[in-house]
Image 1 (cartoon, one colour):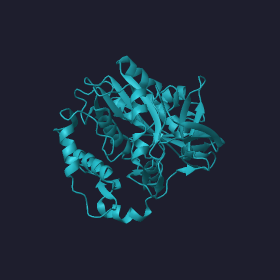
Image 2 (image 1 turned 120 degrees about the vertical axis):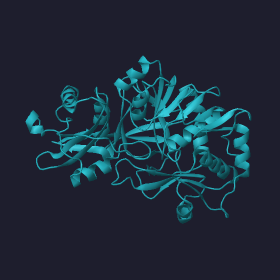
Image 3 (image 1 turned 180 degrees about the vertical axis):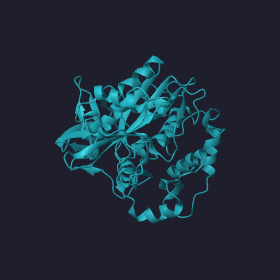
Image 4 (image 1 turned 90 degrees about the horizontal axis):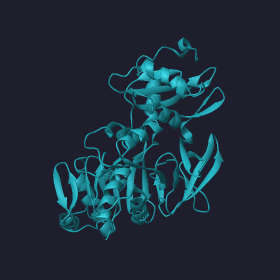
Length: 408
């Protein structure tokens, strides 16, 4: 058995799309599931009904068939020979900085995810009495893991905040939910760093926030309240000098077997791995993750991390989300450009004025666009799409040129 389904048979396991399934009903559906003939990987394409996807994943894990989440069966058949030996669970994912979020397949064992279930329950204070809400499609790894983790707890997983006690969300999603009347009392947040403004808003509502840093390739690396993260239980962390700062490497039982189709995963000879994220130590010995090294912008001889600027812009009044990229510039090398998604009634002029007080001159964007922020399926900023639109001139008119504000 996969080890995920642990609740009492009459308890609710899943509540998605208006359908409610008990633990006993789910167990019977898993046992009766019909899988494609053969012993190769089974595809679960994007758009699969949530309950059907969970049934297929559990059935494959129970029967020793690799399951490829996010891929249709023909794609799963085509990838069969490329999957690492021992693959049980494989997830199609996309990066935040590729030209169009080029897909890659992260292959792992079931045990590598299962091992993190108890540590996450402890750090987030979760148990069987919880009702867990997910805020995204289950072919995305963080949301699929949230549902499997709820089943492991003996809790219920749902796609609704109604009667939920905890929600799994990205920071942007949490920012949009934090003032909702039915907001749960706890939130587990991942996908990007939170900012102080969001944490303060959650605290004012009495919402307990647990933030974790990880990646599809590394799984859990660090967790905490967001202001300063600590290595996740069972994880060894090493910060190593790299271009733009110190690169975060991790060694743990949670690492993926490998990646098919490219990606940022690198390993060393002693079991540590990295995806190129930069980090720094906080004064109290914790960790602050700064962002992906490949998102570094070199402007006027200084290195600026796009994710750091995005986080600080998203904390300004009137900003729902932000995307930051560099574009070639004859004098600066790269010029910083920002897309900001504004709250209803907010003014870009006021946001730019506030940014002048928040950011140093070298960090300050020189061109601004007020538009929705494009995202990957996992909720991360799709900087590749922003760069493409910027180069193609399809973002519309920029905010009055930086030279008009004395920042060119």
